[in-house]
Image (cartoon, rainbow, N blue to C red; front, top):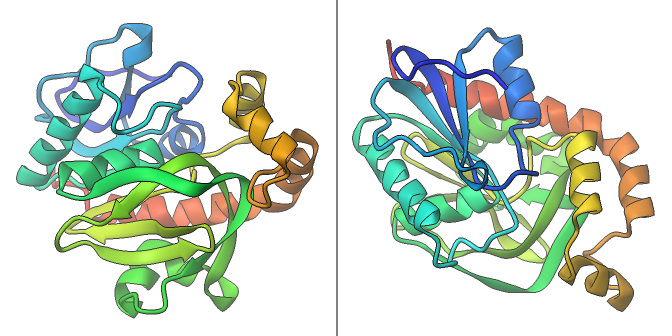
Length: 252
């Protein structure tokens, strides 16, 4: 993964766990010629004390809960608030979106039903049309898309001033915008390689959910079959989302 000095580097990427790397986000940044630095706290890489020198901040997901008592999670929230104070746009993926919600005054809680696999996400009926179109491209034909999920918690209460953009049947808050920032519950950075890495280290909760036959939890076989159908559409939407984030980056 590319690493560069903080000075004049476009993007700082905060990675929590070893198996939850930048994925398609890294591919997109490379394809567009942007410099970026990723730091993984589980690998023992210290996160910077400041976002100074960066133009944007990305926060990845991970198997932890945003409410866990981990110093790195509280540091991530501090960096998110610092970025906001400096006019640096933040994009949060799953756990990253949950940390954004907490950092700005929202709440994260366990959901009644987990979401694991390729599941429908729809535009929020009350969402601001211009904001939705800017950030999510209207979510495609019909205002919906099938996107990748792997989460048990979500941001159940949005921060003051946040605008809800998308939801799903099992998760009322799938994406929100606040200022120049976007928090997402879905994994727009997903790649087939990431899915295989997660399935290889699925822990104990996911197999139990599969055995229970929960309608929002897909088996590995179903997930792999749906990946072939929906990966291209996911990356097309990621291109829209990352381009919208790029338009908000702090000027050099």
